[in-house]
Length: 455
Image (tube, rainbow, N blue to C red; front, side, top):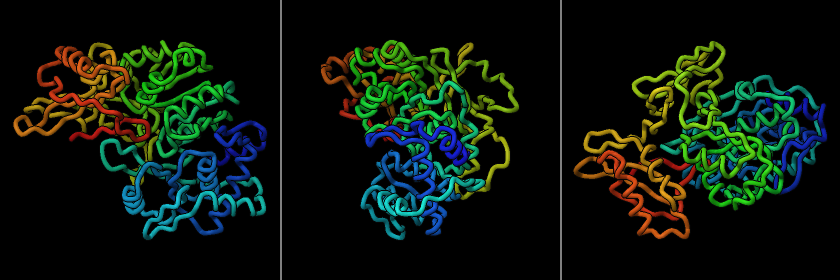
């Protein structure tokens, strides 16, 4: 579990650096004492469930760990949610206590200042490094890129069981490129703890701040979304990217286009590259390291009783999860492995399984189903395109038509670029060719993933 991992590290490697952020370094011993103090404060105040609305920071990490140590269920909510979204989430998941790093107020909810919590905790007598609560819980919200977020219930023990340990990872530096409200961000936290490594927290949520942290703190390992790495590669000078100390890049959270794999290999040549498939509900399922997009079809034949299995049902990927969630909030707990539909539509072509889009994103053009990912790959390969989002737009004749939002390079001639995009899309079936090409200054994002909602 996460609590014992922290306390063992504090006893056995007290001076090792656990967190590196804008405010400096936090050792494992410092983190344990601060987490125990703030956890004891939560317990003394009778707080058994706590939602957090705060930017990623060492204090947020220690608040989460403190809650786990005393058996307080914790849930980190997307810090970029406005008042209405935050209020909706708190109500749906029945939270009446909120820790925040802002002055936000929500009717019917007691809002606690994170800074004040730590100030009060610092005045307490330090508690002993005692054994933590036996089975602390947490609620993990889905990204919400295609609709309202759902709440997946976990124990920290179940989440920690997915972390792999290697003796040579002690002291290694990992960039937090996912947010801590995201399942993958929580995975990063437990992975770092399990290996007594160092988690580097950027000063803010922008890619530029992640880039700065990579350089300043000599980060060796980065796990992030394809969208994050595409923006990182676009913004980081090639001379800088090729001089980094990176050993490993892991992509997850979205389908990985082949062109991006090539771009990452070119821009970060010192790093090995892997793709990991995981969802909030299922947990970590498998990884691929062969530098090809999609999955080896051989995974369909893998029958591991102690690990995940996959199958395709009516074009949708299903996974048998062994370390997934206990169930959605408000539903009965799951007692064993269960097959789950992922919502990802796939096609098997020869010895490869390719992702073509999410089930919820299928575009219906006059009765013909169109998948967005193959269209995005064609547009993305046009020189001058930084990022692209394909979606269905309502049409009175065909029901929907294909539209794309394109983020161009700053120096791109947009008239010429549109002509090139339309020329490239002539390779697609007629019903899949974009009828609307819109140039945008930014793409709507959540957890460094494109928000995928049709119009």
